[in-house]
Image 1 (spheres, rainbow, N blue to C red):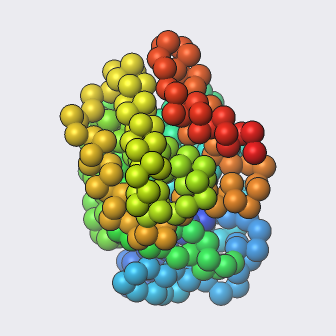
Image 2: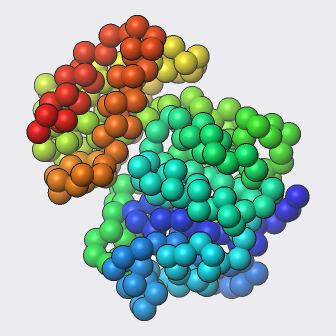
Length: 313
């Protein structure tokens, strides 16, 4: 069992991966040369990173950072101690199939994707390695090839025990994030926290795409805000059907969390929807919940209405 993280692969270097990977690469450049960081990306964004480094812009700072390797081929990197999976949900199955060829039994996988069934999806095809159920709170996106911009509160990772390896000791991973200056919270059972993130991202992904307004625009419109709150309540009902123990004021706290983001914040799903991309995360925020509602015979009228309208456009 590895007691230190000596290498990390950030798979997907868009808004999420570019932020966390950039922060890690920048911290390593300050002197922690014992750690290697690898980026796996694609397209013009990857080419720009390979040629000029990754430019990370936050509300507090801006810097160029350079991974040890930036590639589009998982076979071009040594087997890492840690994978940060930062792809979209629709790319997950293909990503898992690829990394399965470059892992060991002690490799840790942290999937920083939207959704509440990501761990189960990974385990459906991957039996070895340590898979820590996780999620990330962050507002960031690719501004142009080679540049990632993050706005609002600093990125934060929530993670916890692999249900398949409950006795595994994660102290070295917690220590790694601390050394890299990555904000994170550890839970023995991370699922309530993952569902809380899902409540947040589902409500505002659906409502920003539905209304064409930013996160602040939704919050400042009484009707849209009420619809967002209804979506949150419907997600809570479904979570309770899955035995998730929510805090009593989870909806109120979610609204408060949203108010900390800049008014002009757009969700990733909204950006993809506005660009008319055929591949997006709509099914994660709509289809998954509608199927779950049918399974448990629960009514979710607002989600059904909003997602139905989006799919009809």
